[in-house]
Length: 587
Image (tube, rainbow, N blue to C red; front, side):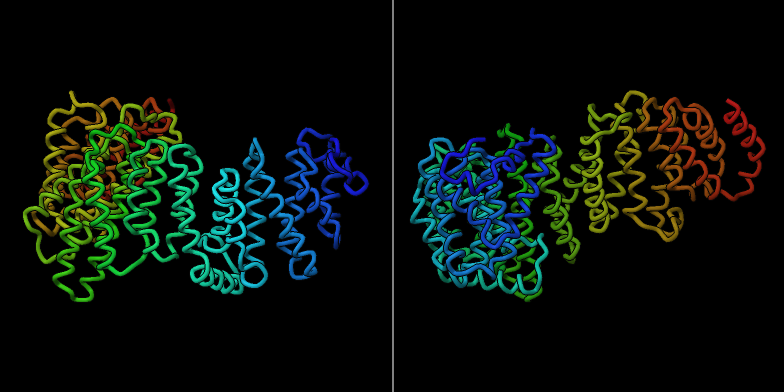
């Protein structure tokens, strides 16, 4: 590695060779030792500062190394540096930034990110005391230069990570400092920052999508703690909405609008904001989702609609508690106006799009649960949600049951979300849910031989899920409420007698046995079905199934099944049962 300036006597060139990932172990060891030496030296780091300020090295690994050394000084030794040394750090960063404006080829992203981290650390250490003009100095230097704007935006995101990000654990002292920084920024520079964002978005939206997306991400990150009126105004929102129609910007614009909608505020103001936003989105044709083919964008849009819906529900909840009947009624109407769109997204064939709207759907059902009575439209909405959930619970053709990977795991998680909706539906209208499941179950079981496996599996699955959705004391589903008892009993009778246990698909087989064990108390009421179910457990459908996965699960379920059936009729089959088990073990 050649030195490009008059510093060969100061920098350890052989140690720097060890920064290359392909370097020999001895050089790498020397580089590590050199790094420690520069970190611990009172002024050794200054050579790295000079190298960055003067652009001494062209090798990316050396540049990164120099920033690392500088980062260590700022993070751990800033308080012990002299005023001149602190000024050297500021000068170094600004000279390096100025050099970026002239670069034909920008630095590699990992260099820019590290520079942004060092700038952010310096900001955190000095903004309140030594460098209150931090942002104005940077903005005056970079203007709208694309290389400079890139570093500026990366620095803003790094500052967000240091000062705002709630996922990072801070000490009480750091939390106090961060609060002071945000308060000071609100008073001194936020309006100027917001204006710079607008100019960047407007300037680069047609020519530099990467910079525009970076800026949208910054706006989304900062909107949670700055004055919303700076962003939620006609000028800014119209710009964001226009970018919702630009293919390369629309996803980030959607995320940015989501953050605006998600900001905590007065319930009346929030309702007005969401309603005005919805009106514009609907006028622009965004609610016509059947015409949209871009599923990635629709997943973002679904998340935005979910955010708007949940915000309206929260406004309704707050207004209801305040006892403002008129305004809370308006909020409820606003919620219900979004239900048709919510249903379109919930039933969408893409599970990511559907999953992103589940939160709003769940909250809407919670609202209905609190109402004294449901009107006809609300009952229709509940039925529509039920049908959507039943439909979306089905496996698709691509699901790999024998070798479940990431896609399969994601569907299992999505199914759990749908189960939460089903449970909430049971709280809102248990009779309606029982009736709907009964209808689907019977229709499927009558023709199970000619129906696809996913239809059969979900019909049995719905019966299984009723066990948790309609809870009973100690699993006593077959006593008490007559309607519920007779309906469940009828479905169980159909399940064990219609022959569906012969269906040639492992998912149906397992669901059959899971459901038989879930409703084991049924066999105490109708013990005549015990022999046929025992045979299913013991033959090719269960413990002799061709799939090891099925056999393993059935063995566990069988042990649970025989433990719960302590009835005289079961004893009659005990001897026969032992013979079958011995035969299986011999095979």
